[in-house]
Image (cartoon, rainbow, N blue to C red; front, side, top):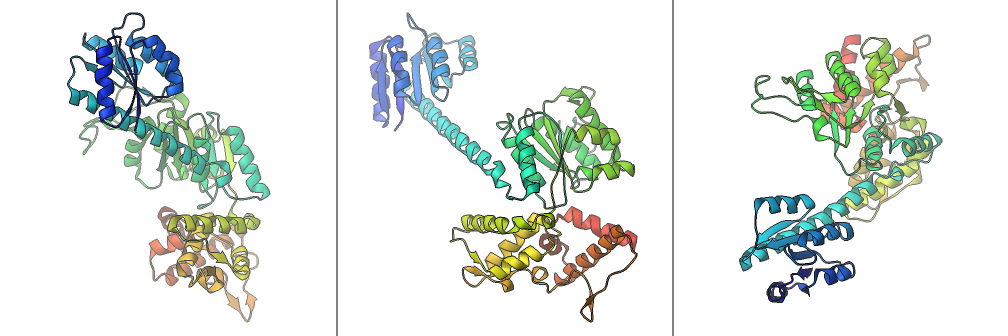
Length: 457
């Protein structure tokens, strides 16, 4: 049942509309004086206000203006016998939900009121969803109590509400996108779009069109004008993930957008202004790629206005028990079951493991353990083989670890990573999809590492 205020200086019209509202199960508040209605409207807090435009002392436009100030969520429907396009446009510009002319049909008014109520319900649901979304990406949902994570929280809190460009760097699976979303949903841009794009997922020509849009006929298959992701993120945030994989020619165009705050669609001759905050992420040190000539130095400095480095999970093992508890609770919420417990020995194994796939790999491991455990207790046998130690990260001979003395540290790490990837792929029967999931890395990252491996070979 909705609360509906009816305002008209013709008592007979007020009575007709009030009766109609009551017959449809609503609570009607009739007023033949607009001034008196406005004195009581804050206490009534109606869902809908129906007001005549032409009244002697106070017009329907005056009612609309006061409703916008006092009750911005209330839908206002204006009625008049003096219908005109100009009045309709003026009413809609002022924020009226709809405009009905009299003499009106009963069914027409009923339908207009019902649409207004449906609209209000959708608006309330949208507000609730936005609150839930913001709650989901509060800082405390980035789990960890280690000193390195406390530094991350502090930095996010300081820069979230600025328009500064942020560069988030860290290994795959460390939570870079989670940080980007936290930055957005705790900023003044939170009510505008958050648009995420993986720069490694598309070839150069398609990525350019996705980011900046294109004009009809600019290339084969461009059958109509297309808005790019930068324009879709207007007044919000665009998250450029794995920006380290972006081609140099496209880096030049991105630099122009960051410098001039305008973009030009592919095949267009006009520039379009954009108001977007940019958060970029890289799973490789961009400074090193800059020194190697694989990333533009001027773009790097444009992106790294505020650099934020995500620590690898192996660098903060004290956070693993907290993360395990968080993922167990998350799994319980998703499945509707009671949260599972975990043995101390299982926690010890989890803390001892190096987690090359970082937090994402840990989450996958906990999800797997929840699915495989026979009861409500996760035991070591429920953990992935590599965590149990059944897939050895290094080779053993006569119980002695073989360590290549004199080898460069960078080459040693790359070699051990290659062995680990090969062992995991053998365990998964050669499936790259399963291997990427088990390691907690994207398919793009896996292919890149396999490509590096083949070149070294």
